[in-house]
Amino acid sequence: MAAAGAGRLRRAASALLLRSPRLPARELSAPARLYHKKVVDHYENPRNVGSLDKTSKNVGTGLVGAPACGDVMKLQIQVDEKGKIVDARFKTFGCGSAIASSSLATEWVKGKTVEEALTIKNTDIAKELCLPPVKLHCSSKLPPGMPSWESWES
Image (cartoon, rainbow, N blue to C red; front, side, top):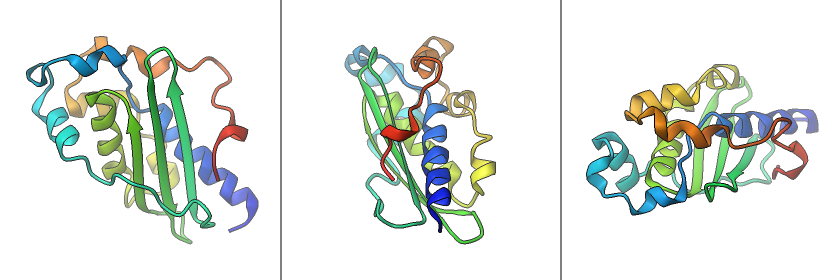
């Protein structure tokens, strides 16, 4: 895949991360009973944790953080020659809802084209995990103009 294609994959992986709901770090101390069972399941049994080979030409890496919350998320997608996401991995430092959201996002993007995956919204993930609206406020912590594509890994 050409350099332009690799840049497109980085932007796609990062754009997917921007749609993932994030919560303040103080939520880490909340008792598990305050979370819906879907959040607890993805937190206790996260799917697709890890990394893909970032030097591979068909892997895109997105990295976002919300400094006000303390959450940092990395999402990697591997795309086949037809533009279909064949694998996705994540690493998240943050609260239970951030980890659960990342886990669910990796499940949802697999098998989709990049364009299809980009239609997933943070509200879709939040609805599936039964996150209350008050817990969505960190999903828009990045200032206008972010993300900076230059700061992302290839």
